[in-house]
Length: 157
Image 1 (spheres, helix red, strand yellow):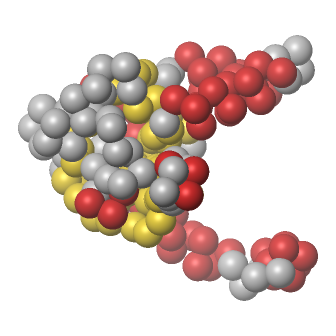
Image 2 (image 1 turned 30 degrees about the vertical axis):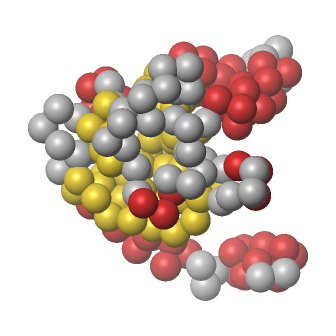
């Protein structure tokens, strides 16, 4: 089975250790086969909208190209490109499946001890647990709105 057949799915609660490392959940490890201890296979981690986004290099390259293809757009979109691309860090997965997250990224995402890791098929997000719970409560309140329900119907959920 190729990596393209493997998916990052589900939500896992975890912790960040005192050195700023998180552990890749067991359910995600098949997806990252070959990464532990391999310095040529970094995990690309950036910050956006309250969470960290972690991509394998090939998925990061797709997003990077998409953003750069639109780089000539002005205003706030340019700031999105500058921030999303400018904050990325290459993070290694060590042989114990730990990833050291740079302190700047941990601070931006407000990561304390408890975190939530959310698999999103080809990448995952890392949230501070309190921040994740707060955004989930907000979503639960919004999901019944007419706009959300229209979108849900349109995509067939």
